[in-house]
Length: 440
Ligand SMILES: [Zn+2]
Image (cartoon, rainbow, N blue to C red; front, side, top):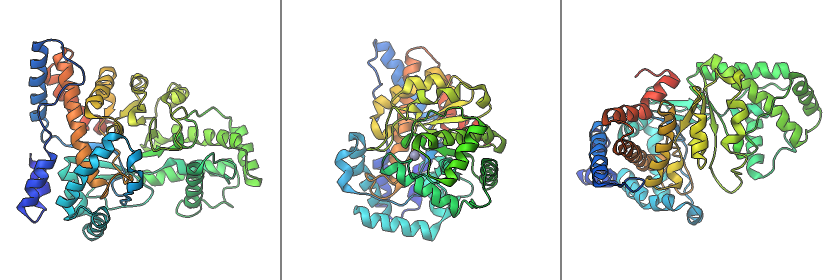
């Protein structure tokens, strides 16, 4: 339990130490995801669970998907619309806020947190990563941030590159409008897209290539697509000629939504093909996300199959963010392809540990080499004092679910305890080390 001591060593009073210890230790025994048949199976499960807990107590994790550096934006008006598990988490997170920031008031705690982040920079993040047993965390953001000695790594939004011309007719709903306008602002500002210089599609795609190279050179390890939140994830094949004509037409007058999607399809497929040249993994949000505008059908893993199964993209490493949840088995099947990975983040926001363990068992049954530990902690309206308090809770829950899933597999005679421990290490960090080339 060195990680708890590391967290506590930064706290001023021993009373806080005790509070945090009590809050974070997960109760044992943990029940399995499904009813076990015989007393011998139950005994094997309990022994395997205990062996996994003990072997992995100090095992570090690589968190494949977070929004750790975001500012808190707790809003109790939304709480009653959240899944039960997120609502239940609020009390634990307020307890942690009190232990860490000395107050249970979400606004005060958030202000203290912001001040500490600003004052302490890297030291704040390194302490937090130690407390959650996180060796490296990937963060979705366009902005630079304290890198915590290389332990916070950037995954910028490639979606911002999919709005090369005015998008007046593109939005179906306010979220799509917000995404389009953020992308257009970024392109014209920080992104450095000089509209006059990007007079045709060739010039625009050359700009895209320069941007990918620059992101890779400045520490990005992947790029993120959030298209499923605002359009179908089905990226059709559009010829260079068709796309060039759409680009030219879009510079003269706003395209229809249908034409805009075809132009985006071409740019997206260009990026999918080029990403490996820059050593960038392609993260795609697949499955559940924030209501109310998200359409699960648009975000379905089935929408992506024409890309995942296309030999043109077999050299591209695709990471299915959120593991396609709730289409767990369909996403697990896709991970049989050597270049498709499963990120398990966000599922803990929707379902309890028992169900999470069941999902993990499905993924592990298909392709244990493809499963990546991830949390998706963020500044959701139901998170009271910033993503770190959620990270403390969710990291523990995911580790518990992983141990339960593997203990079940041991009890069912599918793997030995030694194999289960090895698979857990791969999920926690080994698979991510292979994917991103991180040294172990
Ligand atoms: Zn996310």
